[in-house]
Image 1 (cartoon, rainbow, N blue to C red):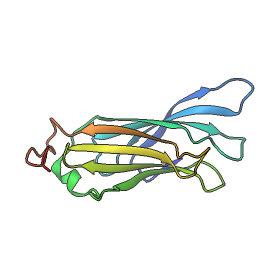
Image 2 (image 1 turned 120 degrees about the vertical axis):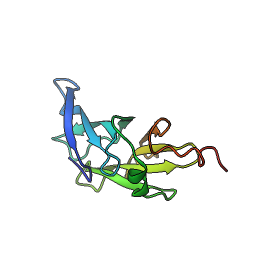
Image 3 (image 1 turned 180 degrees about the vertical axis):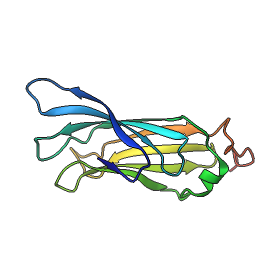
Length: 145
């Protein structure tokens, strides 16, 4: 289960076959500080295994109003902040989703990643939500050096 977000729920579960205990699970989440953004995360769950695979996918879209007040409350550091976290195994592996703000392009980036190296790589995926057309868009910041 994902923690750290306002709304979370499983919206789909797809079996990978009769001879496996692994499924693809799709969950929907609203950003707790920017509720006008909804993300869908797909990942493999393996209920009867010691650990879950690290592959995941993320798609985030504007589904409501995004205001300057919402953006004022977010972490604007280069590394952003973790807004969602899901334990993937008893061996300290988790799936995290980090929100990062890019002021130059006026875009919210949502980076999902595994916290454990698998086959020499940390699995990750990225989705972006541009602020163009929202009340939060600040043209004076866009495309500035």
